[in-house]
Amino acid sequence: MSNNAKPATPSNPFDIFVIGARKGFQIAINNLMPNVLMAYVIAEILNLVGAMQFIGKIFAPMMGIFGLPGEAVTVLLTTWLSSSAGTGVAVSLIAKGVLNGTHASILIPALFLMGAQLQYMGRLLGVADTPKKYWPLLMLASIINACIAMIVMRFFV
Image 1 (cartoon, rainbow, N blue to C red):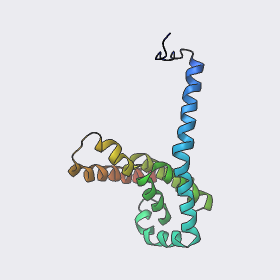
Image 2 (cartoon, rainbow, N blue to C red):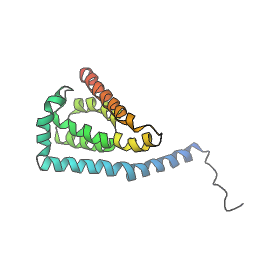
Image 3 (spheres, helix red, strand yellow):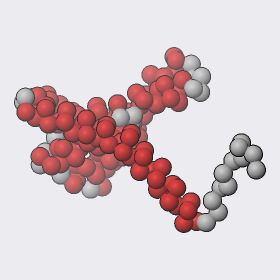
């Protein structure tokens, strides 16, 4: 056997599961948790300095269209940057009692529809050689879809 031989691919479903679970754990610890923790800390800082209440007052009319408090805009803004960060902010607002289960149900489709657009611009659109003139339109389409989903969810929950 040479030194360049590839290790045998496991054929046992249990081994395949364990390997996948280890990879998933590493992704969660190294990629997702830092984003969630960072977003949670930012939300706490905004609360401590009173900025969250200010944001809530300014965006209350716009977010009211979706049946959400004004502070929910912070979930959407951070979701645009990173889905896991948006989740962290949502959890922080739920823990503070600003958001409830109904609000979370309205926000969840938006998290999926417009999540992490900033990250995906370079990772997907850049790699796919999509002309940059179409990028704003593609971003806007996701945001419009998220708004439509929140309106629909408002009437179903």
